[in-house]
Image (cartoon, one colour):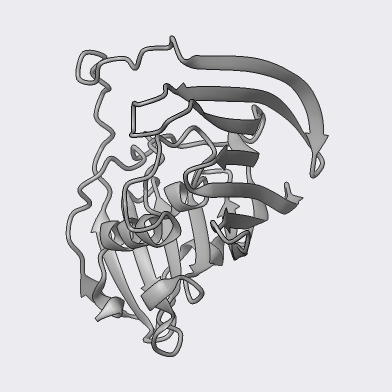
Length: 254
């Protein structure tokens, strides 16, 4: 049942559903930016820079008939001064996750202060709590560097987005003809706007002829300290034993 899907299973299902049931291209920073924090894919604790925002991601795919398929997902992201984060998102519009009342709504809380992560199911008032593993040091030799011969990076300068200063860059990656069975070169363009102050991507645009276009943006950004209750598990939720997270999560604050 979809309500029993693990965090990793949901992430895999989202990727497969949005990109034609097969692995997509390498994601640059900002692509699936909302998914990453929700599924513990960020390993950095940011303290002293609280914010809350609405996150909107829109995917557009153009069919061979000229018709367009659009999917828009929305969510909320909140972080306090201690580096605790809360993300809330509804997956009701994505494939099989739309089945069942409230089955797709998920709230995820990462608490590096307590060293715990919580996955809340508001429909059933249950929570799975899991100790957060310490971040492992990155081994530069573990992953060979991708050749930069087919990658071009352009500095887009700085602009104000939703009230915060953001630094922009455009990365163009070229897939040579014949690399993936393609007759001509394929240009994959990712434009990312990153806020050094918040240390988050505030907007990202990706154009990939193989899969379509995506636009991610944070809206209604507030720099106010959020309500501490947002990072606590409600007292009327039943606790279920969770499995240890397989991927690297934020390191607990010292």
